[in-house]
Image 1 (cartoon, rainbow, N blue to C red):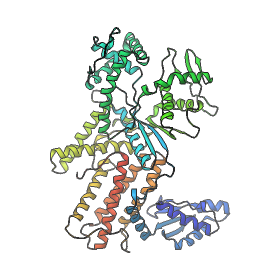
Image 2: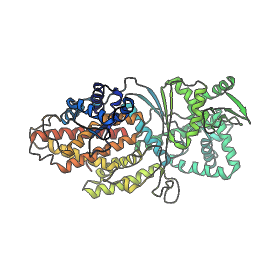
Image 3: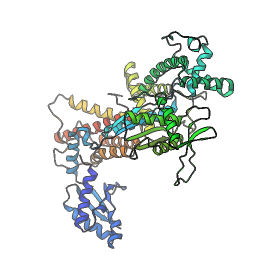
Image 4: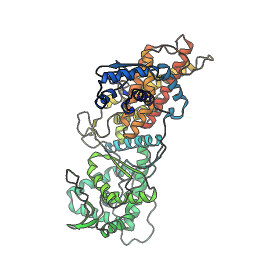
Length: 591
């Protein structure tokens, strides 16, 4: 289904052509002065330079040609050459009716679906998720849903950190606590125990303690480095213990990602790429792309067009150990072999931009990917406290993600109980739904590259530009529809364009916003920008609430108009449902 703005632009382009000007000047945009018009075209200003004619004369000629347009009811030429337009209301109503009858409200899927690898989450095994993991998970999940809605095949991979020094630190931390375990006995030759010798709760202490100690105890750090190398070289005891760590940790990660309504198609980690590393390094050396420098093996990635220095990419340290870059390059080789993606999207902290610049350049230089394959890095900003500083717990530590979710749910629970009398069990379930919307909308409504401050009181508010406000609007529409359908009459909704009548200002505003749905989703996909959907649903919810407050929908005496309104708000509800699903949350039935 064509976008409404494109249909209007087609008429404007035809008018330019009919007047003897190129159709390229007939670009239409939303008005930046909605008090004057709904759409505008500034093409006459550009055409004037090429045709040596006053822009106002061109605008007047085009406006005259638009007098018979099906899409435009009013067109005015305004000095010095703007064309201001208002849509034909009957055409708008018919357009919305067609939207309501189409699958996905008429959104046109791509005709050339891509295979996209979406790398997001970035959790570390044996470490609880903390607030630093929030943004990549939330943003990545939304981008995955948007890309799939656009018709692409998306493979989401959590890509866990499960192979580097942190694993050596965890294993050494376990050794400190339980030195008699069979995994640490080099003479042990039997079957290692199936029973896991630790719990998820133990990880909350093991890694932080081991990490802190490694910064003060050089001997301990060296042991952890040696253990890491033993693990990577296939030591049986280390591998058996690592398998236990993976089993417990991944189970916990799935539970906590589930609380965020975040899921992955692949639960792969750095370890999955390890078999590719030896041959990859030898191939790079053999082809003269990698060479030794101060004991390390590096690949130069600096290009003549660079305006700043891009350091060489180190793919092997002087002690023979691999690095994150080595693992990420080997992962690309694995993904090429298994999935041959058309596009890679990495969602992680923006401070990793240099790392991915180096990795991408090596991948292209070495021919790991086809020249047309897209390699995209989406760097997200950080979530800070209300004071603008890094978000901390009350005692100054890094807040775990589970705690943030709990605090948000508790705050929302209070508001739910204040608003109305709801049984406690239902209130808790409702608070979880609203709490997730508060967190996700609070995050996604910001441009992903920007830092933002997490303000629990504001994000959990049922008023203003918040997730709970969007849900409250949806619940209000559900309530109206329930009353309408529960009146006991045989009356049914009618088509949005069932009658020819005058439309109120608030009604037209709501209709125009509903008609923008396809355009908004298209831009959100093209720009990988979930915040555009947030902005849209806030405007749509606001427009509905103005319409609701100024019109008595259920008690409207004109049966035809009442039926049209019910059909309109049913469409609005459906649009909001699609959008919040793309953002990764849902709405309760009541609040």
